[in-house]
Image (cartoon, rainbow, N blue to C red; front, side, top):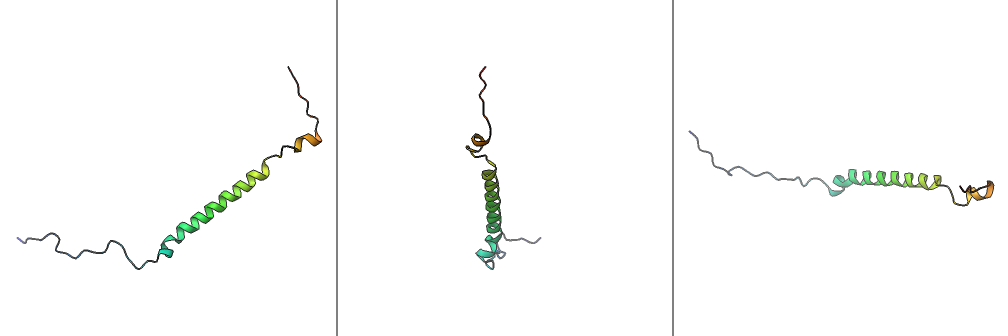
Length: 67
């Protein structure tokens, strides 16, 4: 019967140091830029489609009906 000692093996490194921080963060940065572009485009379309307050007064007769 062989006895094995706990902790006698070599511990491996938990993370690899060969990766550059720019390479690791590049997908997150590109996702953030695309998400901000999408939000900006949606905001521009919303602002363009909101009617201006003075646009209805010039061309039509607005009558108030009181009951």
